[in-house]
Amino acid sequence: MRANRNPAMDLALIAVFAALIVVFSVVTLPMPGTGVPLTLQVLAIGLAGMVLGPWRGFAATLLYLLVGFAGLPVFARGASTVAVLGTPTAGYLIAFPIFAGFVGLCAQLIVRRANTGLRAALLLVAAILGRFLVIFPIGAAGIARNVPMAYGKAMKADALFWLGDCIKLAAAAVIAVAVHKAFPQLLAARPGDVVEE
Image 1 (cartoon, rainbow, N blue to C red):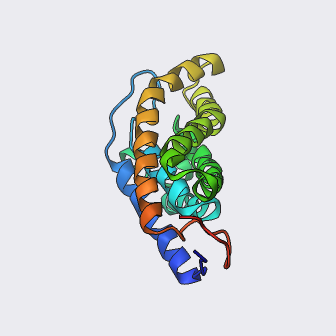
Image 2 (cartoon, rainbow, N blue to C red):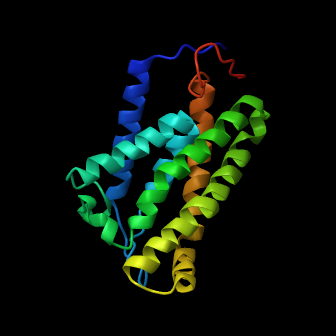
Image 3 (cartoon, helix red, strand yellow):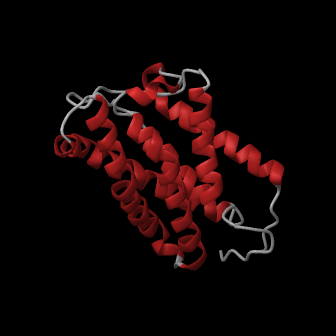
C-alpha cells in the first residue's frame, strides 16, 4: 500500500498519543527505595513508538514532557514544571523520547519486512532492547543523582521495574500489531513509501 503523509493527521496522532501518555501516568504505585513510582507510562510510550514510528513517537513523548514542563500536572503523582528534573524520576523522563524514537525506528523495519506472525515477538524484543539500552542507564542515573545513591545501587533499584515493564511492552506489541493490521499505512516514513500488509 502506498501511504500519503498528511501533516494534519500527523499532528493529531502526536497529540492523541501525548494525551494517552498523560492518562497512563495518572495511576501510580510507590516503589520503596527508588523514589520512582510504578506507572503505565512505558506501555503508552512503547505503543507510541510502535504505532507512530520514530519521529512521531518521539514528538508525542516530547510534547508530553513540554506540557508538563510548562506547568500542567501531567507527570506521575501530579508533578509538573522543570522542578521534576530534580527528582528521582528525571532520568526516566529524559529517556522516554529517545526510547520512543528507538522503538519506532525498529517498528518501521519490523512491520515492513517481518512475517506477520513474528511481528509481535520482534516488536517486544526491540522494545525490551530499548528499555535496557536507553531507559535503564538514564533512569538509573536520575535515581543516583537525585536520591542520591551510588550508581550501582541505583541500577539495582531500576531492576524492580523490569518484570512489569516487560509485561507492559508485551501488551504494547500485541496492540501495535492489531493497529498496523487495521491501518498498515501508519509507519510510512514519507509519501510514496510502500508498507507491506
